[in-house]
Amino acid sequence: MYKINGSNLDLGTFIQIARKKRCVGVAPESVPMIQKARDYVLKVVEREKPIYGINTGFGKLSDVAIDKSEVRKLQKNLLMSHACGVGDPFSIEVVRGMMLLRANALIKGFSGVRLEVIEKILEFLNHDVTPVVFQQGSLGASGDLAPLSHMCLPLIGLGEVMIGQERMDAKSGLKRANIKPLMYLDAKEGLSLINGTQAMTSVGAFTLYDAMILEESASASLALTMEALQAIIDAFDPRVHQLRNQNGQIRVAERVKSILKTSQWVTKDGELRIQDAYSIRCAPQVHGAVYDALQHAKTVIEAEMNAVTDNPIVFSEQEEVISAGNFHGEPIALVMDYLAISISELANISERRIERLVNSCLSNGMPPFLVKKPGINSGFMIVQYSAAALVSENKALAHPASVDSIPSSANQEDHVSMGTISARKAASILKNAQHVIAMELFTAAQAIGFRGAKKLALPTKRLYEAIRAFIPFIEEDTIMYPFIHQLHAFVSDGKVVDCIQEGDR
Image (tube, rainbow, N blue to C red; front, side):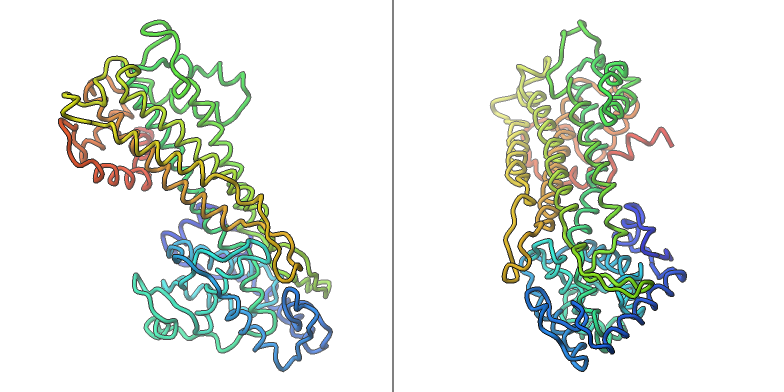
């Protein structure tokens, strides 16, 4: 069991708990701070001094005082009224990520909730009970209010849950899982549960993790394409890239050159041609810029994983409660838009390499559309069409959501981040880009079928043989989509990277 303390989550641990379902608990050293903040909230309630979110209304209604006899009703009403999400539900793993991140924020001891509330969230996680949370409806400021409200309703026996793959009302689900709901939410607890960026951060974390796998997979697809096209390796010389001073570019060039170290298919300047097209020659510059973007996103997302995103924030040591804006999703919104653009570029350049493989004017001796009898057979013509459609769709999706803002709550909340939209768009772009890289691998493997596998580098030969284990050389036209779908899974599961790295273990 991994013990979270509000400061010790990183991307790898997040994946272990949210995706791979590692058990999680509260670090013992966090308990005193949780209790101290809770005690101070109770003291505030007894004093009956108006403090936002504890004994007042919310948003524009913050000037409405709430009697201490009604603070529990206030918190329950908050969850019910704010659960206005629509659209498809988030995946189980995204909701698990939301629960983990919200618990980790509350554990820091600046929220004023009972330990029992945090433990109930972790009980859901450890018993694989997942609230049904709808994807649309968050403005990304004041927190992910609608998604987090849906996430937290089942804590008090309301809303819906998933038990395994079965969807049901929370009351039935909790009974089946032998979990008792919280009897009530006390002062500030409802607001503490939903005031945060955990929906956008969970979506963003999964997208980032899978994008990091994709970026490495793209180096492998690039390498296989380079062998199929007898590309010039000189452009990957480390001396060239050191002069640019861009870390990602240096790393990608080094990685691809290492993959192709034993290749007999790549060429030198002047052997077959003087230069390769940009989609080959400038790949380290493009892929490297993507790598750097992913590293920047990782820094921001891991910081947010361990952040306090409540409002108000309880400083129990100083006996203060400060109302501020840590719930605003702008840091995640901007980095998710950046991530979306970056992943789009990885697919864009890959699609151009697919075109070079299928175009007999550009492929250095390959038959048109990589089929033995073109004309009667269309071969890989429409593989390139599909890749082109996906990258075009990505261009529309890559338009930043963070540049938009619509005032809400009677203009009290007059600037919002749209960060959850940014994260969801990045996730859609990622899926499209995974398909494009899969198509490049599919096409490059077909080209190698013509060129010959004996002269492949050792890493790309392992990759080629792994693909050939479930996808044959295409002799004549056949139904193509099952192969593309299989390769998408092969890419998204990280198996491409495994093939390339196998000899390094």
